Length: 409
Image: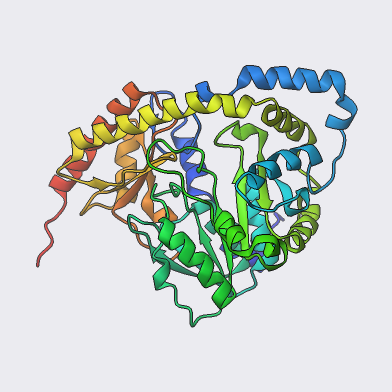
């Protein structure tokens, strides 16, 4: 008799859902498809030669260490390199405030393992990063989502009478909307967290990818400025970072920065998950940070992405200015488009038939919504393909709107 696995799964697996983006990428992997679906870096920006040389150098000078088990907290020289960057911004961190994770996605998973009990109240943006929802749903929290505007999450609308466990926010060029949390709201959110004693989970993978406007301080920097030397004992911000967007996602190097007491619990949770992240890729990342390769690659990286963002915005204006609206991000990898009167989940099938792809917006809402929205990525397609893809998408949207039934008033 065949095994009925459905009777064997733990009850929490009922809340596990496939990543919509990962599933869509399977459909859009064909070379003829112009995909705006994934958040992939442009392959030409990857420092392939530098990584090759670093790997050869590491394996010729210290192969025993680079190929051996390592500490769960992460390779100490790498943590020192990362800590130094926060110290420059006046956050009084030491390596003890950092744990290296297998991408920032593992950081989200560890936050869920250590901070979320069944029924806990989690405040998120609407829309928000689908990977966070996927990581935390098995923990069965209650999501309270606040619709973003042009200044990000409206933190003044947080119901402070509720027992909030934490607020999750992507402050810079948010995935998926591309909007950023204003400076005023950043200060307001940190002050609220301390006054009402909740945690902030700051997910910040895109800050370095700014193409226009002024750099804004991270929430952890604002908190450190407020607390000074008391930050390690009084801090309430858990900050997630990654090298995936500025170095190479295949290295899978992310980190959690937090007060040392919190870091110790994250380390214990990580021990049960994977013992430690790849030692070899940590050595590679530390080498590229120490020798300046990462910073040296920034000008080229920003030039490529700025051109692609501008190309997509221009193409949208030319092809869809009377039929849709969209965000104008100052950085990051995404533009958020709203097509009135359409259900973009249904539109996706027609788009793939025309060899163009996007991510329907419904995937980014914790409690439903976003039927008329979609996320567009501009980083991994060259300008000429972006123009062609937006032209195809424009025809599909305009045709669908023309065929849509007129709603009676």
